[in-house]
Length: 251
Image 1 (tube, rainbow, N blue to C red):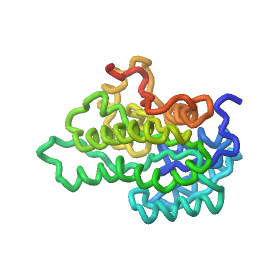
Image 2 (cartoon, rainbow, N blue to C red):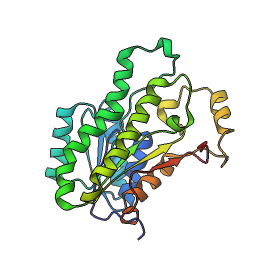
Image 3 (cartoon, one colour):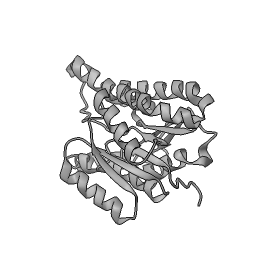
């Protein structure tokens, strides 16, 4: 099977719903053992766990704050005890991202964005790299966003953090290439999920008009992109950003 991940072990943070769940599902369908991660809503997380198990996916669920270095170390240790060393890491956890004018942001919110999108991938990578380096193989796939490339206004804290995440990924790709470890990013457009339920239909319709392919993206679309980057077929692809936005990318 093309893009097979048979017997690989994958961790997707923030994967109890939305894009994270779509990514976890795609990796599991490709044969990977998938670790679901959540922080706040156990009922939703257990429903996600049941969903993967019903698909015949070998999975487990671990609660951990993906921005806390101590909890990340414990998370990775738990995965390795149950499934073995991680082959695929997908930092996906995210907080809310309110849009505000630059004058309305507080410095603490900028730091929160940086913690989630730069420090969290750093802590996660630091925890999984010993195993990946010892095997001479690994995949790190960061979930960024089109906002960095599209220069979205009144979103400066999120855009800055996503830009830092992309830069970090490119640097790590070069550093880790000699160890057989690839580092790439997927950059989804706006893909409505549960956390966008309060957005107005008018706003959604305006965005939809800007998508050249003429349809909304889905979590599955993002999952398929991650599956490719995690596969052996993508072993010569590193330091790249794969945009999953129906052709909206302006470059």
